[in-house]
Each structure stands twice: as structure tokens, then as C-alpha cells.
Image (cartoon, rainbow, N blue to C red):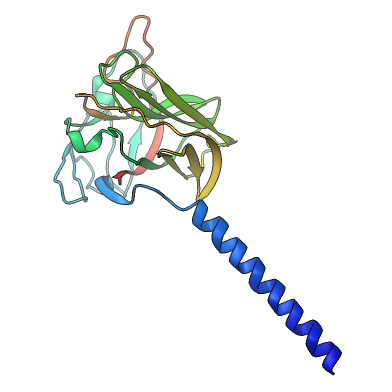
Length: 231
């Protein structure tokens, strides 16, 4: 009995150690930037042309005529040419810029397209830098480019264009820039501390300035919500 009891105690001890390791691992992968500074739930009624902000900052978005609202999601149809009315745009506010803070953008969406922009603030050539969440090659891509031209981009190791809803979180801090898909870290790179700050609108569904040699990369699919958080 004593021998069996000893083995049982050892097993319990090992299990507790494993639990502590698992907890530490989960903690190391825990989210940064937990203060919500923008939250658009996209749960307005059919025909709505204003996207309400649930963060408490009352940053209302303008919903373009192409976008179909209702049913708790916004639907972005396939379009051709330059279509400003394909976007949801939120006026510029400094709180929506990463600056040099910890920062995170979370989007829940579904699509079957291999190359589209989902949400961004600014674009290539924007003074002060820009950030964006996009789908490229079917993978979720997080990109932060600072005003000094340095940047960090990371792509997910899994595809997100299978027509099912996926929650994609792009986050950065002093130690890492990473992409999290459905709660699991699917890509990470070394930290990026340079400042990203511009005067552009927050654009959901594609670029605000496109045409000619600049592709619009419009989003096609459904978006459930967009959340912006800072430290």
C-alpha cells in the first residue's frame, strides 16, 4: 500500500507540474493591449448606413452603399473597378493609431478569396506609416509599418479563406509581432517598437485610395466585428 501510495503521490506531483507549465505557457501567449479603443459589432439593422462604436468613444463609421447590413454581420459583395462605396470608414482619431504602444486589432470574418484587404489605417506611402490586416495567399497577414519606414509583417501558418468564420488578431508589443487565429498563435516575429501614427481614416473592406497601378484589394465576404485595443 505504501508503494502504491508513493507512486500515486508522484503521479499527482507530475500532473501538478504539467499544469503549472501549461498555465505558464498560456500566460506567455496571453493577449497584450487589453484596453478597447474601438469596437464595431456590425449588428445594425438591414439598410443601416452608420456603424456604431461600442467602445464608449462614439466613433461612428460610415457604411458604403455596396455593404449589406442586417443579421448581425456586414456583407461585402464582389465588385469591379474603384468603389469607395464598398468601404466602412471611421474618421481619424489618434487613439486608433498604434503610436509606440502595445496594440491589437481583432477581426472576425469569413471569405473564400485568396488576396484581399480586411481592415487598415493608412496604406503604402502614408505619412507616419500604416497598419493593416489582410489575406494573402489564403493566409492572414498582419503588417505594421512605421513612419521611419521600418516594418514588421507576419503571416499565419494556416489558411483562413475556407468560407468559415475565423477570428484573426494582429498584435504587437516591444517583444513580438504576431498573428493569432481562432485563439491560437499561428505566427510570430521579433518586436517592433517604432511609432505608427497617421491622419488616415480607419478603412474596413479595402483601400481608400486605389486605382491605376494601385490595386483596391476589396474585401469580399462577411465581417462580424472589428475591435481595436491598446495598452
